[in-house]
Amino acid sequence: MGNANDQCLFCRIGRGEIPCRKVYEDDEILAFHDINPSAPVHFLVIPKRHLENLYDADLAHAGMLGRMMGRIGELARSLGATDGFRVVVNNGRVGRQEVYHLHMHVIGGPEPLGSGIKRT
Ligand code: AMP
Ligand code: ZN
Image (cartoon, rainbow, N blue to C red):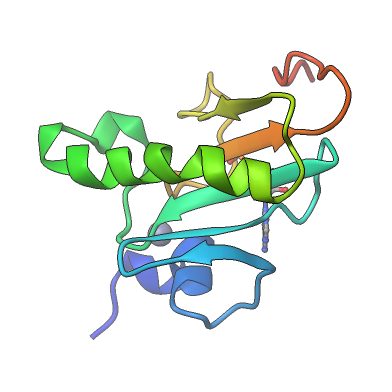
């Protein structure tokens, strides 16, 4: 039986059908390096279960969202972002979301970062 998630890029990465450079994985979430990094440290954290973006999140997702946020600091530090990082979640058209499977960008590195806001 097929559904829309069969073709979702990040669902497919979550299922291991498309390779990624994995940073962390447990039963609920997966973190992997962004394929087009905008800073020395740039990885994405996704829930394994499909959710388009934060418009579709409610308090039933609090555990999963907390788990994503709760892991990010140690993962950023382990990758060398020891002096700060940004967490960015793009939502919908105005948010310039490109992949419609919820993800948190973690963007850091040794130097100060740009705003992370896409302007083009
Ligand atoms: P967004 O605009 O927030 O939807 O950003 C989607 C992000 O996914 C971009 O930063 C892309 O570089 C990244 N991306 C797209 N395809 C892949 C992939 N196969 N593996 C890792 N990152 C990807
Ligand atoms: Zn998905």
